[in-house]
Image (cartoon, rainbow, N blue to C red; front, side, top):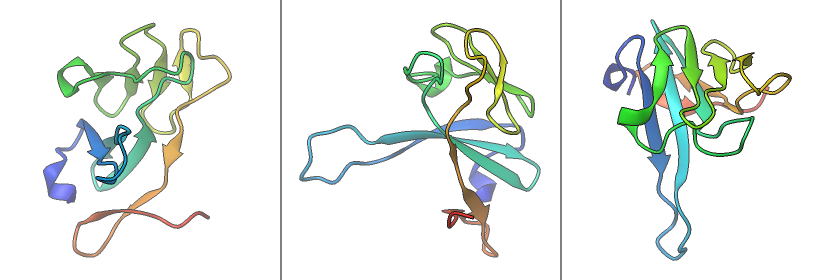
Length: 111
């Protein structure tokens, strides 16, 4: 729900893996700016590690940037593109999302 993500918040989320598998869930980030929500895979484009392992370790400047807490590569909030650090030429993997009429955040169909 949109109401569960404060304006300017970057929130770590995880889709649980099916019970019959032993693998980890799928970790991603939800970012809110007003009524706009963006989602990115929680994976640094520079080094392939999570940007953060826990919510309290997630480095971000609201509405501006996300920073990997391993090598400090910084990415633009608005599009996931590299802003500084060793990520030049690469960016975060976006997940297309929409907010429906009920305020639920849903994965959107590919354009």
